Image 1 (cartoon, rainbow, N blue to C red):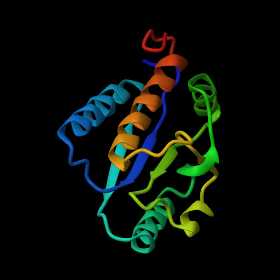
Image 2: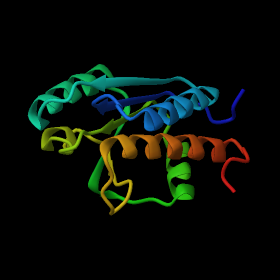
Image 3: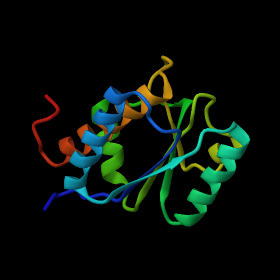
Image 4: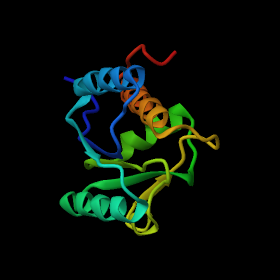
Length: 149
């Protein structure tokens, strides 16, 4: 049993259509299961307003969760800092990842924290894959694994 088990829910917009990114996302989701329950909710692509309403419904379902919205104006972390931050959260973590046009302001206002993956811009598919890898890396690091060198 892992020392640091986490319940994680990832709410993201749009299916990953690129096979490479999709297979890597699935791989990291599978690996994450070693560190607790990880569920994903994929919302349909539409517009920021409609996506925002759907995201708020997911946030309402998880009232006691710690909500982290991935957005370019959020705080940046090194991998070690991100890992330590996740380790300090003592409840389910709900990560919100927007689509190509970002996250609606009303969703950002409901977040406990806003986090930036990078100052650079990535496709939403690429960002999802990179972020899942970083969640896995952070939890592996917390548990003394060898994935992070």
